Image (cartoon, rainbow, N blue to C red; front, side):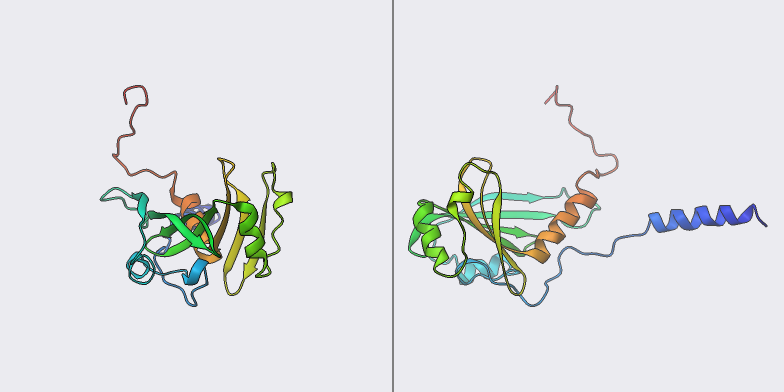
Amino acid sequence: MIKIIPFFLCIIGFLISCRTDNESFTTIKSPASPLISGLQSYWTISQVEENFLAELKFDVIEDSKLPIGDKRPPYNFYIISIPDFAHLDQLGELNLTFFNNRLMSTTFFPNNINNYILELNKSNYNFNLNTLNGNSGSQSKMIPPFTEVNFALDYQKKYYVRWSDTRLNDEHQKWISRYAQLQMPNQLIPNPVNV
């Protein structure tokens, strides 16, 4: 009897470790959270096209999908760039990022960061340009219910302000941490020497 207990404990441990993840990574959660210029998190690409992009010139700068037959949960990453966008009377580039057809974040790269931060701070954002000059940190502010606004420098040392839904950010990071390193069985990995 004592020898059987470790055997059953091993089987239970194995079954627990093999449990399937029921998270769909496509759920539309409520309430939506405000992003830039009246946009709302969880809007679909078609909702954004109908309600926001109708008269704007834009480019799709990323459209990543999993290969057909991939058994992982869906992963569709789509970024739209609007090169001549005005926010608070300041011109710049606006990027809209979708995760599985849900608007996750809006990122504005103003042409004149000094004037833009002055205008933004009139709405009580209280971002300080001097603390970012040459530093790699960021400043953030929360807007209810789930919007985080970040002011930072990107890898090219361009200033940006990003409005993002924390729920979608967390979900995206969860997908990356759980599934990004997994590969489909029988899927060939290209040899970098032969590519």
